Image 1 (cartoon, rainbow, N blue to C red):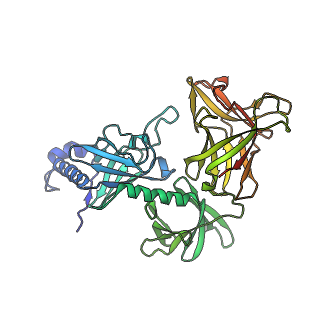
Image 2: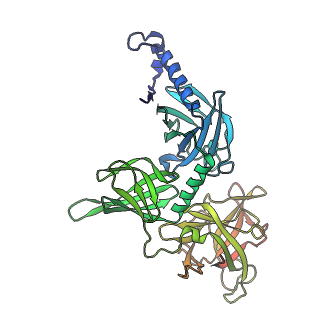
Image 3: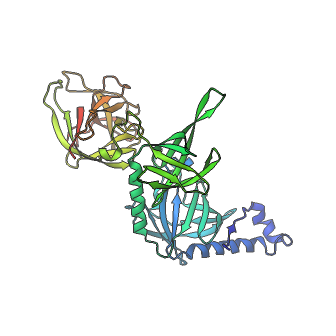
Length: 452
């Protein structure tokens, strides 16, 4: 039988009076029970020869989904930690730091010295004083030989650790997880089927399924409800943050069925699956946008619709899978690049004024990539604050073999036809045009044509 440890939450009274006076209720004193629990968890953590798979969920309400880390604890107080995604170090790179267990109303696991993997999610900045609302200290909830459940001490997200087997290979595991993430990036929407009936549709954003389903209000009227289901990737599919029950069916674990393009639920008694779905207006998959494009535009000088256009080869690279791209050309853009958004619901490309997106610092000033309007016969432009959601939607030529995307105003700024680069001081003062870019600072009437 597996030994299960449950940690008793201790009040401040239990830590003082009860430690001294408790004689009759338990065979051992409260202080002895605390020491016993700490020792048991130390022994449990260090007993995994190949470490633990750690399902880690940043952000309040798990709104960007979960990531898998591998943690190996040693008796000398060191922990070797790596993550499937890039943090302050490349994906899969192992970082060693210290760990400890202490008592603060309950038994707590602490990554007690700075680790560039886990502290990436907790690191505060001027833009986000709480980092990603994430934890590096965790309250033990329960555990046995194969599984430990904890909760973040500050933000409360559940962390589940699973013991790795004796033949576990970290690189192979990470590779399989990456392949599964690539599978999901090809689909932006799934239909949930339970016992053969279509129940609702789930849109993918980051590592979450945004499930929308109808609920009967009366015999003839329905209301659409929304449930966000966060998940981590496994080598064969996805696992939800916590079990989800609908129409009497409880679901948590799903395995990818490539031939049927669906995730089959593998939980006991669950006849359910998530079927990939493309709406009629769907344009291009995320992967079809990745790669080299020819960007045509009108640059400096007096603008006329018939003026000669410049062109440059750019590349759309992965920024946030199934959510955004980074347009780069190291010689043309002398900064980080331009972020474009991807709508996984209809497979479209768009640009919106930066509001906390890719940021570049030039001589302590911020470079903002912004929407502008250039009038015919003008060499200048008009623009408004970068905080407004002005931008462009990509108009597709409806050719998947040779796609062409023309940027058209999204209507928030009706005369918008250009993307510009401006400098702003840290206090928000407009400093002027960014002149440090090799490709210039103004791009009018952008058209993208796929090269490969």
